[in-house]
Amino acid sequence: MILFGEGDNVRNVVGILLDRKTYLGIPSQQTGYERIDLYNKAAKKLGMTPFYMCLPQISGKSSLGFLYENKKYRLVRMSLPKVTHNRAMSLTSYLTKKLSMLSRSSKVFNEQNRYDKLRIYKLLEAQESVRAYLPLSMAYSPKRLVKAMSHYSSLFIKPTNSSIGKGVIQLTRKDDENWQLCWSNKKPAVVSETKAIAFIREKVGSQRYMIQKAIALAKYRGRPYDLRVSVQRGDEGKWQVNGIAGKVAAAGRHVTNLAKGGAARHCEDLFRSSGFDPTRMKKSIEQASLLIVESLARRIPQVADVGLDIGVDEQGRIGLIEVNCRDQRYEFKELKMNESFYKTYETPMKYAKYLLKKRH
Image (cartoon, rainbow, N blue to C red; front, side, top):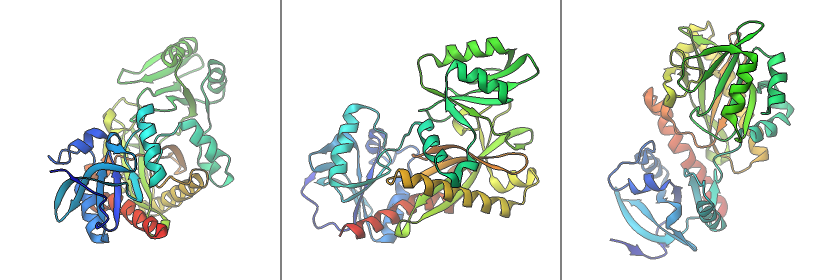
């Protein structure tokens, strides 16, 4: 039954903005990577009421959505909530217009959740406090690629606006004349410098790509690994690290993403295998991660829920690979890191509660 009204009798409502497919799966509890029940659990603990929306259902200053109360979902139309956590992608002009409509009535945190990777690099590179964590990066051009190949032995050439490792090419020097190319799920190929440059030019085409100096990642059983670090705003708007999970590349692969065959591993196990002290390394990564997101938030204030891909080289030096503003939290679920996984849902709700107080 659809109930129409302003919902003025419902207190402490926080909007959770979802993609349409996830939103439509709520009644049957088929919500993909989003664990809606954990939002509900956190909301109950904090004395809040979640209102699940999707952009196509927003009209004017109201939206049709699922209100979760008394262990049940009700489909209602109500006023747009004063605070909304954005977990949806708005990649079309229609959805962008709807998101703008929502943001005029609601404080939307993580309003934009996909950024050009090169833009993020430039914003951070301008701040001296985090510069040491940034591998050299630049916009792709054939000329810049030739120059980078003359200075560095390993490079990543990757799209500036993609996710889960799509389109990433790794280029590694084999000897004075040849380079190893790793691309997609293809078997690595050793080719001449001229052929490598031509191959990359063809794959890039008219797309926007960047060149990034590769971090010489530490290895686990001969395979490179990196780390996903969940960093979110919570109580009083303060940033906190909610978990660190390891990602190990599949045999013969150059990316660690789980969607590309990578395997999740507890970071402590990875650190021990590399001869690092797990406690000390975790603390160093947490400190670096907080410094990075605090620096980023100075330039993009609405950022509040971030998954950082962090690399550690064989000497234990920390480097930022990229920033993800819609962390899908696969790794924590895969590793049964239940406390960290729950916190990735509870912390945004705490931040929403803090913002609600500020708006009253």
